Image (cartoon, rainbow, N blue to C red; front, side, top):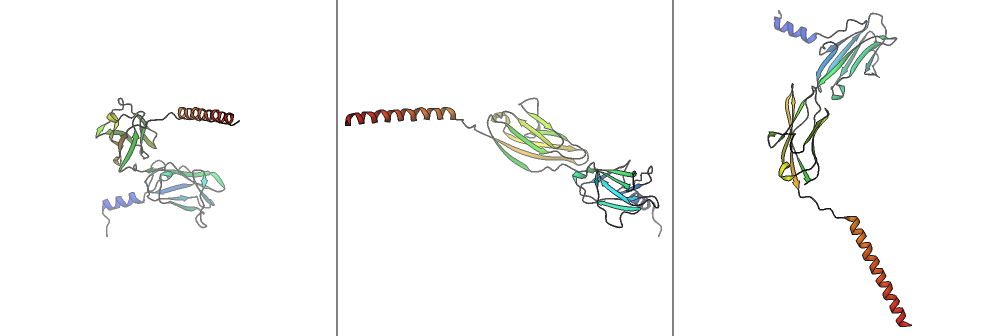
Length: 247
């Protein structure tokens, strides 16, 4: 049966692997890479095949700088390595294959793990009036996301209301240094926008309670000491009078 042209092209694309032709050791990847970088989805599987020249000897694999333990029969001239499932920690990892007896003969590929931010649901947050409130959401994603905060469904104006917004690529935070119920109580939403995965959101229902009156503990202790000392002096004075009368 003759294969149709679209099917043939699809098969060629599926089987194609990136090859580093500049070294005597070559690495093939599935899925294919581009310029030594392999893009892969989170929790997917990526496999590598390392080929050495005929009679080249034993091969070694490294993940970054750590030696990978290979089984017998998977070291001579052709070596296979499989990563499954791919995790966030694999993002940026470099897999290098080299000759055991000549580390200068090597070839490597780098993983770029694509994953969406993990956000959902609503969190209840309660704070005292005039205290500090901090709302945070996990902003880890690849490619990186843009972060927008909303208040009661509208984009939050960070220039007013005493808000401070930060994002270090791991956690996006919205800080309110001094909460005022009339201004800050309500529904906040952390919106992460990804070019690949679209929007992910998490909401926070901020409730502001009456502030707690703080008692001056030091003054109370000092007052108790004065009262106790006065009472003790009164008892001593009274006792002296009783003794004097009995003589």
